[in-house]
Amino acid sequence: MGRKHRPYYRIVAIDSRQPRGGRTLEDLGTFDPMVANKEKRITLKPDRIKYWMSVGALPSEKVQAILDKHLKRIEDEAAQKAAAPPAEPAAT
Image 1 (cartoon, rainbow, N blue to C red):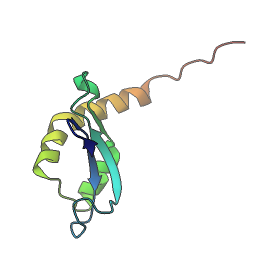
Image 2: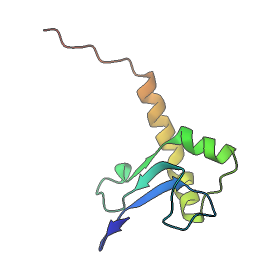
Image 3: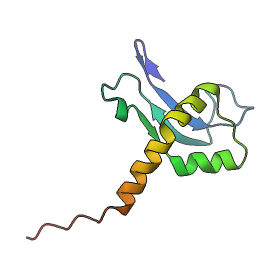
């Protein structure tokens, strides 16, 4: 994905018999190396990634490196958001 001098990558679950740019089963995240803030370069869906891995999906070498480096951090952020008390609505 992306364009000239502006790369953008999707992390997807795809059947191995599909062509490289073929129909995907599910979008699992993105990687945008041009974003200045390194924490916001990667978006992942940890629960769906774990599901696909549990049913036999094999990540490519590059995706495995991304998962090793960032999956735990993103899971922790999601857990903190879930555990945070909901914001109180403003009184009118």
